[in-house]
Structure formats: C-alpha cells, structure tokens
Length: 267
Image (cartoon, rainbow, N blue to C red):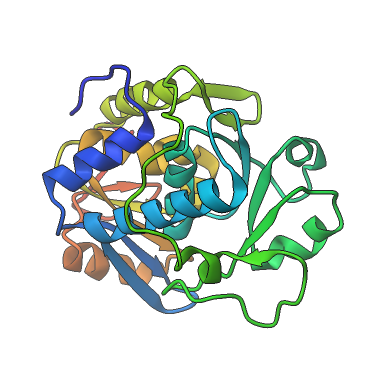
C-alpha cells in the first residue's frame, strides 16, 4: 500500500499504470443491460487523458474550477472524476435537483436521463453522457447539452495540465464534506487500510453501496491500495458466485459471496 504524501488522485492512476499497464483495472457489469466492459490501466488512463484534455481545452477547467458531477457509479464516471482532479479542479457531487450545489459550478456533467431538468437551470456549461457500455454517444436527444462521447474522441491521449494541480486545493465537495486533492489520497489510503484492501486485490463493488459510500471508497481506496475493481450495476445474485470466480475476485464491497472476504467486516 502506498504511503500518503503530497500526492493527488492523478498520482494514484499513474502508479496503477506503472504497476500493471496491461492488467484489468476496471471491469464493469450491468446486469440490467446485460453488458460487460473491461478496461486495462492503459485503456482507462487513455480515457482519463482524453477527458482531461476535453475539460481543459473546451471548458477551461483548471485549479479553482468547480465541476459538478451528476452521474451514477460507472466506469465513465471514474474517468470523469480522475480527469477533473488531473486538471486540479474541485469535484462537486450533487443530485440533479440540488440547484444550490449546481449554481456555482463552471461545468456540469450529467447522464442523459437527467439532462432535461438541468437544461431549465441557468448553467454556464452542460455536458451529457449516454453511459453506453462502449462509450457511444447520446441518441434521441436534441437539447442544449454537448455530447461527451462525441467531444472526447477528438482530444489527445496524453494530458499535461496548463496549471499544475495544487495538492492543497479543494478536490471534493460532497454534502458537508470537503477534502483537498491531497486529502483525497490520504483519506483513500487510510480507508483502504481500514477496509482491509490489499495490493493485488480484485474488488467486486456493488453500485448501490458505492453510491452511498462515495468515490473515495469505491474508486480511490482500491487505487491507493494497488487493487483493481469489478463494478456491478443491478447485480443478479444468482450470477455473482460464477462471476467472482471468472473475474478472480478476492474481496467484495457491499455484497456477500460465500468464500470471499467482505471488506469492512471481521473475518
């Protein structure tokens, strides 16, 4: 497990990329849509770089910017979060109905199903995500939001921040919680230890639990520990034992599977 210091979330991704570039870092299942997507550290880092370039070049996202994320737990959400932090921005996690939290945002990213009410607000910039398993664009939408999938593909695979992120700058605002970029890494490292996430773990994460726990728990803690993630949305309990075996899962977050340790619970 890493030792906390003046690091930012982007450093956690860089460490994962150095450690095992070709190994699966995030595997995402949606049992409702019957889909599976696997991203190696290299592929995921490519999505993060493209997204960070999009945020920086098209929306001037930089240290001090506030990026509101109105997205469910998803591999694309993970890319958006790490891209915003790579730019040094503050991520504001908010519901679509939380007008107060969105009012101060420089950019709002939301899934397509939540765009209609957001379009009625006086938002400076709005970017919509289809959350298609393979990253395809939105269909059947004609509102003012720009399409993330269309925009992101034109941007570069390597990201360099115009203004280096300040580890002491605010990284996350979630309800009454506020953490610096450095604090995100420190909190994630401590939480990984408390939960018992070990280097090399393959953690199966229930999306409902992840939504309640927040991105430090479902995204940054596994990265800080040197683990990889299997995200499951709409989990079908009957499929979990076989899936855990197929994916070589060693631990779970929010789900119980016989013979596999559940993070945060005594053995």
